[in-house]
Image 1: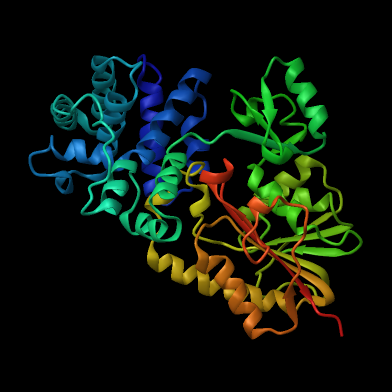
Image 2 (image 1 turned 180 degrees about the vertical axis):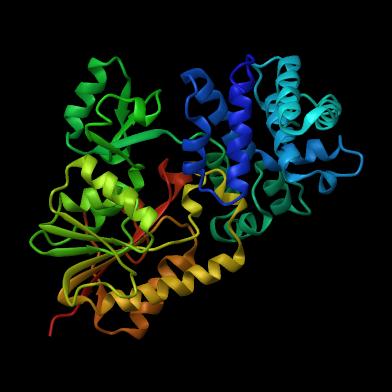
Length: 436
């Protein structure tokens, strides 16, 4: 694909969409799809792929009007090609329409032959060139209007509308449709040293909210100075604030029960004597090993283990960052909004409940059980902890007082909201096992 001008980034964007549709996580799809591209092509391919996820509802509505038999008649691989072209036409003003159509048709020809190319050409030439003006949600169905205009699943927008209200929901949707900033946290270097290193390289930075990392302008993380040497780890400020809020006791053993990819493991290792980091899947554990080794965290041991069967009899603290719906990370993971479901929420709540009960048995009397998610859903957060405390009287909430009140729930738990705090969403509860 790289032999013809302009095809490489469009083909890479299509491949990313194809891989994600087949179940590959977005990070992995990006790693595979962007390999070997020049910087400008990498940026364009990433922008197109992420933009398709962020604006899929708008793109599909526009394409649906240009396909006589409707989008259900279009094969998934061809639909992804059409979305690549439609996104350029409707959302990338700097690309001339003829260039958007021609390059996308060329990709279609390489992938599907002359017949597919002719179909893609005909459809894209009928697609309106600009997205519709943003209008106020219709009074008779404000949720559907918000979901359609912001390209989010209606069932999720309806939940947020009940939880946050109309104005806050609109702000959340707007946040989710922005590109998330690149934020780095200390690895082998501290924040001040990282700031100096980037400044010496001519790379602009600014402090993240509450000093939770550095926001870095420009390049991909792997191309920043200090990446290979483990000078930093890439992590949103919310996740650093989670570890700061949890404030584990410094002198003992902390078990990080769902540790991959390892950013919070590195942060926790700086706050305690020894961390035993566990994850169930070997592929994720390999990434955990890479993160910990790059950051030089010598006081971390890593095992493959199920959070329901931790390989220790007793620990001073257990940190449980449970698998969740991840609704606080949609700006960073724009594909995730199309993979979540109400059924998955129910399943994840049940699984997290099992993890909590199992982890509680490992915490020594007087020790800490530290719980976290990157979700905005009450069932996964406050309500999960309320149910746990109702069934296990050995534990009680013990919030820390190191966070501003605006970052805390009424119960004193950490509650970070993207539209309010300008970062990923996150939740954390700090529970103490009563001694004796």
